[in-house]
Length: 57
Image (tube, rainbow, N blue to C red; front, side, top):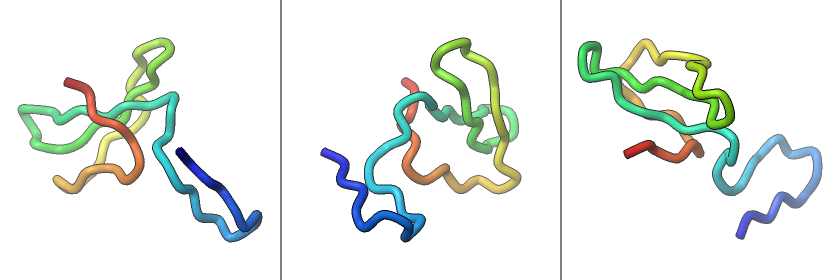
């Protein structure tokens, strides 16, 4: 369960619910994706995963 207190410390606890990430097999980078429409939002330049975003299988 995510608890987001104290307010105003710019720290999120828990996963972002409306986004997923997957690994691009060609470039070996993580890609952020919107769950509702399936649109790609952002691509990482390095091979490091996004924090707090669940993985697609």
